[in-house]
Amino acid sequence: MFKQYVNNEQFNLQINRFINDYYQEDDRANADLETIIPRLNDANSWYEAWLDFAKKREVSKDYDLASVYYQAAEFYLAPADPNKEKMYQKYRETFYKGFHDFDYESYKIPYEDSYLPAVKLLTPGAKKTLLVFGGYDSYMEEMLKMMKFMKGIDYNIIVFDGPGQGTALKNGLKFIHNWEKPISSVIDYFKLDRVSIVGASWGGYLAMRAAAFEKRIDKVVAFNIFYCGLDALKNRMPDETYNGIMQLVDGNEADKVNSLFENMMANNIDLSWKITKGMENTGESTPFDLIKNFEKHTMHGIGPFINQDVLLLAGEDDQYVPISRLPQIQQELMNAASITTTVFTKETGGEQHCQAGYRELAFNEMKKFL
Image (tube, rainbow, N blue to C red; front, side, top):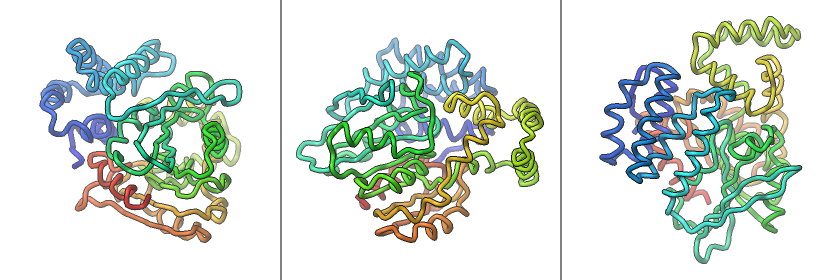
């Protein structure tokens, strides 16, 4: 279940995301957390605490935990910080040393003037293919780790970083809204006729977008629902503030918007991370330009084009996606072959974003759906 470790809402989400879903019963992790948690006060102490324990776990050859701690250490570092790239490389290096859940093959899928990194998890005798990807800030290694909850299904699973994610981003491919492009490239590369897809977090929108325009997709899972990019900015922001910002955006008052965000970000670690990470992903250089970019990421107008079987997963207390979007999404999917919906609550567990803290619940629903 989702645990409240500290007073910062986003810190809690990330600790549950990185640690709690896999290591609730792990004596090593629980012992580490007793020392780490009291040290987490701001972005700098967050980095230092996780890094200290990443190094310790790497020395003791606990590569699975070292990897998780390196990922956490990297999370709030600014793109210009040289330690960010170091943490990312240590995260990946230790991840593959500690990943033994599946037999797998690694690929570099040609895409534009670069490539999409992919890993194919092999299931003996599997006849079908499942494509899995993250969203705004997840790396394919994080998605690979989650696939332990999918073991044994009749699918070979291909997990990849798309534009704006992980190694694809490091290689210069920026985040895009028209996700049918990378999906089609993956399908073409593996010469597949039919695939099912799972998009996590912002990937819930990206999966819907892909399904609208790539008809080799037969089943689509929004893990979780994600209607539009601006929801992630609006959620947890006072309506008055958000409406004022959007009026300025609509009036092309770029300088005012940028100044406003500069002031708000100075005292808000969550907002600062959202904007900084967004600019890193997209290549935009100001908050104003980032918002204009985010406006492209929306299900508005594409719902009627989705004619596949759809699974919608939603958390009642999702801090990025308002649960109020669910009826709208269901209504706009007027031509879907079928719609299956599961809402997770505090009572059932899984009420947080992407069921952080009780991830297995979401994957149980996916297995039933697939």
